[in-house]
Amino acid sequence: MIFEWGWRGKGETRCNAIAAGFMAKLVVRTKGLPAEVIHLKPGINRLGRSARNDFQIDHDSISRFHAELELRDDGLFVRDLDSSNGTFVNGEPVNEARLDSGQILQLGDVCMEVRDAPEPMATDQPMCENHPDIAAILVCKQCHRTFCGACVHVLRLEGGRYHRLCPSCSGHCESLAELRQNPKARLKVSDLIRRFFKRPPPPRPYVE
Ligand SMILES: [Zn+2]
Ligand SMILES: [Zn+2]
Image 1 (cartoon, rainbow, N blue to C red):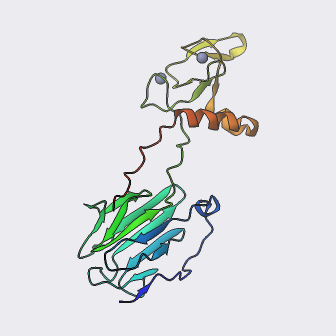
Image 2: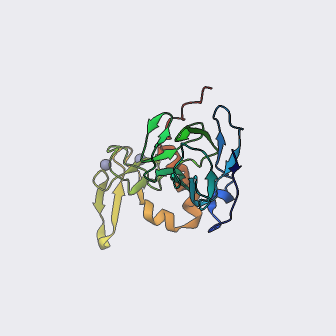
């Protein structure tokens, strides 16, 4: 059986995922096969039995064009290409799925462990302190809580200026959009985002 995990350099692109040190790879974990390593490239990676794929897997259970993996800044994703024997993640059949480090991707009968998959980026959008489903547009300068437009108290001052007051501490609220445009304030915004972004649970570890 011949395995050609060749880097063919097709459509090679620079990508922040790579710049950030993410080098997603698949490690073959199938009885009777060597633990070959497939180094995925940014963008689309096609896997299948045909030599016309980015990575050829010469195995009877693998379709000519079996699946494609997309390596993006915000994650690694797999899409089944109507393969005969299916694509599975941790044993569950999938058409499309996100892949996290430690999960097992299975194409036909060939199992591969996912390593170094990029993690989801913090959404650039903190949510309202009172309404977890509503995007926040304001942040309190005093208590640093974030709120939607409906939550802050608006005071109209003489001269047509508005003051927006925090419903929690009555501090002054600033627009997140304005903060983002001010490079000096960006760090502050990313701190807030970090605080409000809920990380997904870590993937289940692979047990051999
Ligand atoms: Zn406040
Ligand atoms: Zn709100």
